Image 1 (tube, rainbow, N blue to C red):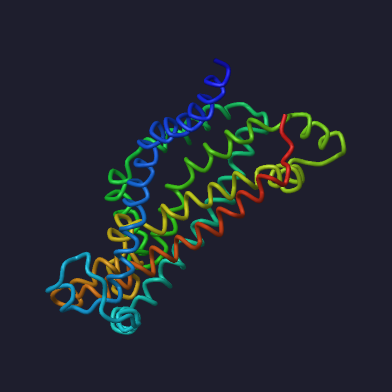
Image 2 (cartoon, rainbow, N blue to C red):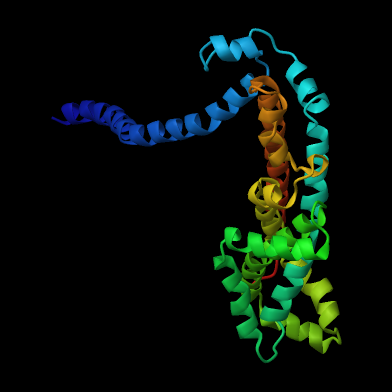
Length: 293
């Protein structure tokens, strides 16, 4: 009796992992499908950047390129003007991102940390800006920029990006500052620090993780913007990278898929590399020990 019981134990132990594997099978299938839907399109875009025009037109879309060379990338940069589009995106996005972070952090500090009459109303007005669709403000803004004489320059993009990015930035940073212990600011005040010293020496270091997060979110929104750039910039030499990729079709008559996929690959994998770099910075900052209550 006892030997039969002992003999059944290994069998039960061997069946238990099998049942667990069967239970986990739908999850693994879901993870595999998710990876397939995310990874395969990126692999397909990268492989398409090495194909020739006849390969695009005569072979199945899943076929691999016969040769791997940089001809399409050279054509995208030399004939398509991809370097100019990237330069214009950098000139529009990074100043806007800097203004969003500086003004957004200062506004969140004034609205959440400082105590003054009417700050709740102002905070609600900032949050209401999140609800306004971008499409509704394009025509009024275009009229204002035209009257000001700054259309067909990079300034409408910088001003619009900064204004649109402020509500979400203030909301996220104010929410993070709400979690900070008030004793820190009280101690700084007792030590003789004024509001500006408390902002730069106390508040900004404490919310640096949130600033990295906001910078990451806002960068991807601004870099991938097409609607605002397409509305306010009509000169060819001021097009951002998204508008420039859209015009690859017209520039080559019929769609020249090789340079187009090369331009898309530069955009996708360039931003992906930046995302990985900033993501590591955020995760490293999270472990450096911000003081919380």
